[in-house]
Length: 92
Image (cartoon, rainbow, N blue to C red; front, side):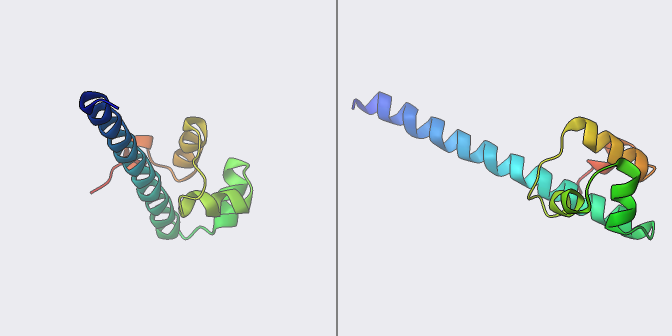
């Protein structure tokens, strides 16, 4: 393999890993925000699941970033928590 080709390959793999890391970090922080807001409202995971018509198991997986919710699901969760999606996705 030529040096330039090898460099391009390594750069692509690094960029992909960096993207995946950032992507996973987003879902982790999103889950933390959902859990914090839910707890602040005194809601259980079951209460939230009932409001958005999802399973308790799926809500739990979202909160620990094991599952990645669709945009529609994030919108429904934000509505159930009485906040905007922007507030839900605000990471300090």
